[in-house]
Image (cartoon, rainbow, N blue to C red; front, side, top):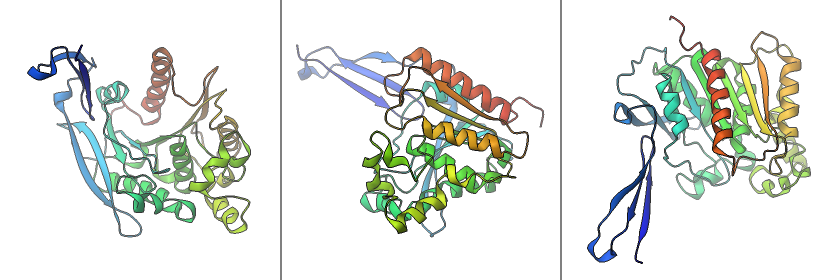
Length: 309
């Protein structure tokens, strides 16, 4: 039979169409649509440009309710990746729809290290230019605050894998800027990462710590090595899987332990360990729901959502 399917996805909707008729008559019908607990027609997506430390403009996508008031009181979840020539493309997420229903704003920084603007964009955030990735992300957070989307105690940051490194580096460099941090399955020890499983393959993006100059550079931003005693770190939930063979859970274990040891205030530092789980691919829907529920409950508490302003 001549049949085919087309999937479409963006930040506010997710529809899959199926053509069950002959291609010649170009007849299509709705096959499946995601059901979410919010009217997506009430949401708007905006693209802004944020000036980073080197003068470059970094795209920042913001998804919010159409009636959102810019008074600095909105809980904002800022997501980023920034590495390995990977672009963050618009896509639908039922989990993010839940965050919107909770009253949150969702933002994505298309920072250096990815491929949003081709090879140059990637190369501007790798090896000894990796700090630019963190600078871009911090600039996005500062822009959201300066433009009254939110305030530091209402701004959460999230990223996984290389994005976990992003969150770890930003929260150790600017703990004052964030109200909650969510590093997931992150690369957090930048000195020993090549020693475990496929870590050696990441030296093309991070550099080799066996090189003297690279060792010094990596040490300057390695999240695990930059946890400092006497510092008040934001409320943090580290997440990992106990059988992750891509980014071994030791990264998360050590980072969480260092934060718990050196935390100087009452902000909680938690670690959520999924048993019999890996880097995330193939995780059953039931476990994804449980993890999202824990994360959003943590954000609700940490960002003071539901409290009278």
